[in-house]
Image (tube, rainbow over all chains, first blue to last red; front, side):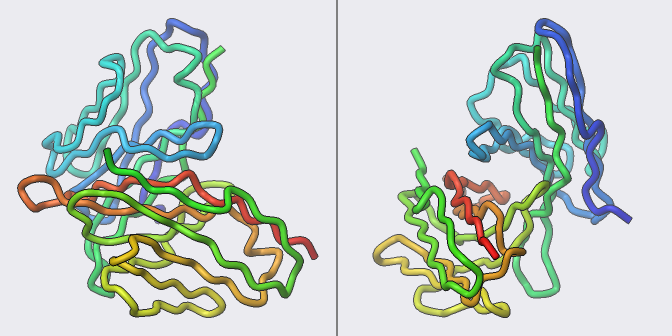
Length: 115
Length: 116
């Protein structure tokens, strides 16, 4: 019954490899996001999709490519991994709550370590 | 560039103390300010503030927004060890077309440690 789920939870890989992180939400939300949280806990948005359409694309290297096969899924593929890509990556989705505000719900995060 | 700054960066208190966390912002097209609590995993939502001067309250936590001075505070009274976490402030902005699609700009967080 998890609302926003991500796989894998942990990912350890070598520099230069290509890896993917998957995200799924079962909340019926139209909008999904990818955030990166660095070692200093700074959470920064990378991408957002609304109904499978890319709407936010912050300044990230083009080695990062999001893909949304449908509005419940938003995957993140990273090519040629670098040491600086090590971080926790959070997926989120947003929708209207019963309280009448638009809240973002975060997934549990994927801790990526590049060696 | 939109900017959200939190202070202090870290805070160590004892159970029963009251703490005030600060968040100031400089953004264009402000829509709302949100507070999140992050323990070991994902940030969890605490409050959303859109209007100045109206306090939001949930148990021992409360928050208020000042849109003129561009800041918000989060108060926690009678702190408990379970309040130990990173508290994140985020501001939601609109894009040029007036929609926001929920883009949040986060501050760097305040690490709160409550000792028994």
